[in-house]
Amino acid sequence: MIGLSDEVIFEKDIKLPKLDKSTISSIKWQTKSLSTPNRNVYKITEDSQLIKEVWHSEIVPKEERPKYDNEINGFRKKWHSAFGMRKKVTEGWKKIYYSGNIKIYGKYINLIYTYELTFNHGKLTNVKFIKKQKLSEHLKRKK
Image (cartoon, rainbow, N blue to C red):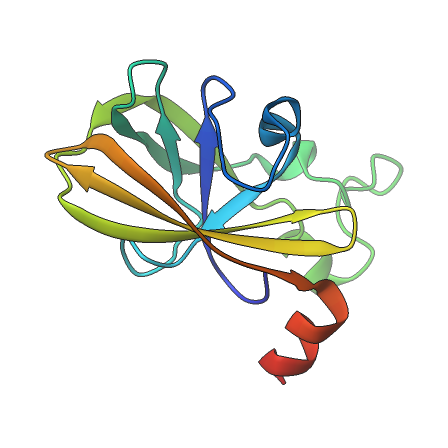
């Protein structure tokens, strides 16, 4: 929950032990298990396939950036030009043929839930509950 991570989205609510099925999609799930975390987005589809968002970034014209001042046709401070400089553009999704385990973490109310998901050639085959921890304990452990 701290630092750079990738996001995991469930296309449909699946059964995760210790959690109500209806809460699964309301939780922002994260992982650091699939690659060097780079704010990638992975999705587990309705048919349990692992897919990854394909994206690139583009430079935002300076006039469209949040700190651009139309009154002076520029930025009040030079470093303001960096705000909103790049935007993410999604190109689509591609199937990932991953075999192995990934850990996902998600915060619900003031608790962190950790699960291990097992994939075989990109298909989710098993879900294992690892732990439930108070957010305050989780943050203390990370320091």
